[in-house]
Image 1 (tube, one colour):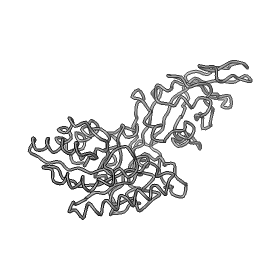
Image 2 (cartoon, rainbow, N blue to C red):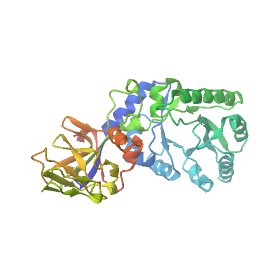
Image 3 (tube, rainbow, N blue to C red):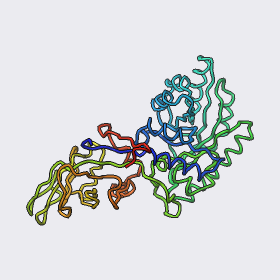
Image 4 (cartoon, rainbow, N blue to C red):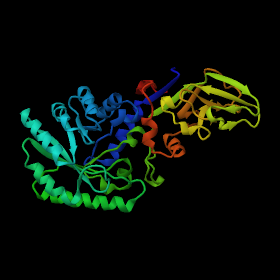
Amino acid sequence: MHRVQAEIDLSAIRHNMQLICSLMGLRVSVMPVVKANAYGHGAAEVARTVHAAGAEWLAVATVEEGVSLRKLLPYASICLLSPFSYDLAEEIIVHRLTPVVGDLEAARALSRTAQRLRTGIKIHVELDTGMGRSGFLTDLAVKHCEIISRMTSVVITGLCTHFPSAEDDPDFTHAQIASFLMIKKQVEAADILLMHQHCANSAALLRYPESRMNMVRPGLLIYGIHPDIPAEFRIPDLRPALTLKSVIAQVRPLPAGHSISYGRTHTLSEPRRIATVPVGYGDGYPREMGNAGCALVAGRRVPVVGHVCMDVLNLDVTDVPDASVGMEVVLIGAQGEERITVEEIARIVQTTEHEITTRLTARVPRVYLTPSARV
């Protein structure tokens, strides 16, 4: 056991992928999002797992991520979701990435480079239906698709958009879906074959079945994390894949009146037993959990007291009499009958679930549990 480690249950990843595929049916392809090191879970291992479970497509955010996966999975289809620097056009083409394009200059850069390399490039066109981040505005989208369709060596094979508030704004999301379908119809009327149409993230594919088109882009769901949507839309059998563990490094009895950690934000009102645990915000555990969150020791919840430091945090283990040096501490995951979820931590920190797992830094070893090594 390392001072802190993230255990990734690959059988849970596989289960979640198969569950989503079953829910979508045969007419809807599933494109797992494995950007940002697969939301902190490990891109290579997760990509292998979902690809073996039936994912023909994988989604990344950067050219570097796409190139790494291409070396790992030579025959997978890899979609580059985010805008790219034009000087990376050759990398995109050589490594057979499928870029999402939302401006004409990007398309021209790809066209020039593909002509020079004497090859072609398939792209997906992005619509900005309300995200406000990238993509063609809807009133110009059809015109720009027609312009791109006339460019040498560039072929439009897909159309996509993104929902900024699928979790909590049905009216806006329904308007986005209607806008996308209108543009899709007009683009197809211009004799552009759209083999792939994708809009739905994890929240949307659960809450708005009409948003699924013929491909969906789950991120959180692959990792067993529910987006912040009403309970009636959630998948009951989803399995969290990540457990964040550490160990007790020290236990000390401290007197009443003693203060804990930087800023002295917690002062003991009576004698307590305080455990020091070697994990902190330098590992990606949120500093905001100080005086707000819990960990699991011997199957019981114990509070995090005082500010979380860069390398350590403190737990009040007074109510766990046998707490001792070397005992396991679970910061995310299950121990006994108790569980601390990513969703719970996100609510405390007041951020998205995505940020909690992607915060985990490189100094946290990832330990992968295969189906034969599950604990």
